[in-house]
Image (cartoon, rainbow, N blue to C red; front, side):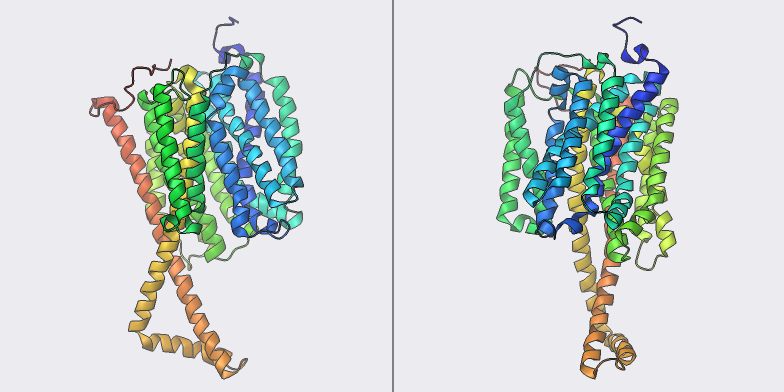
Length: 532
């Protein structure tokens, strides 16, 4: 085989299968860790002598480190080779997992989680690039479907597996479980990933730009993570973070324009397929899906009062649906094109988020709550493969940069989505609580009847004064539950707005592509070069 021929022509089908299994195993392990750790948050507060706000930094530090690490993946891949960066990611992630399990203080755990996050960044970005490269163009939709299976199924499995581990072992095994898997995966990757993935080029790294964008990213993600706790812009801490983030991004932009070797080749956004995929990824995945998949576990745990493991079991049908349709959508993308599959996905997402998910309330039968989200999960499963295939198909040698930027916007958009969901849910709970209280004040006959009914039921067990207090407390609890039930419905509806925005962007893309209706915008600086 000619050494100048594409990589997918230089490997056999058997080698491709082995490579796919190795890469997906590494990605699955890394992505699983993002949600499995959330389950252990209540379990590590006492052993590490901290509170809920302190332990949340364990999650925030990981997210920040992963997001900033993505920005140097392309530079590292060019200088070290894709294979070596993938191996580096595995070694860092596995070693940090062991150290997280051994952590004896909150500070140590936060530090080791930060290291672990950088390992995930190297893993997920290089893995997707390798997969996209080793498959021929007519099968890259399937490759992205397989990758999407790991990316989408792993987070859904996290609560179930995390709940099982914490109930039968200790929280430390959530980290230790990665160690043997990581070692096996590292050895397999070292021997099976071909040396053609080790091609190197001189290091071209803009440290100044990286410094500015890192400061901006850290400030922004910290703001979004801590905004609800601090009262958003009523807090001087949040205002300072917003200022630092804005200034950081501004200085980053100036540095990139003036630099002869920019950190990011922004001419990549001149390619309409990548640009529209990037925008859709932000709105549909970050601002809609992240809200929905953040709210559903909360619905089970806070409103329906299910335990962690039971919540995971209720979410298992959703995880299976997303996984199955990830593969289906990948194969369909190769046959009918990723744009058409995205249209089908959008239909399911809108029906699921606007018409079905808002039906989830306090009175919905538990079995029914497992299947109402299925339509939305079909849309979610059919989203990842086509949007990634569409984004990367015209990038050529800039594929790794495109992958890194897509994952970066996943972190940023997901942080926005989670912050929006948290803020909207709290706002809606307060609104509906006030509305219900106002209704009760207009119908005192019902209120007195409710209190008197419960007073009669419990007065035989308590003194009259205590029984009356408990009856009134039950009224307050019922009001709170009803307000929360309405709040979840309203917040699900609000999340659907961003799915509509994604559909609008997709429609504009079709207009731009087929009719030339929309001018190509932005990115006019003369130093930008069209990617090949």
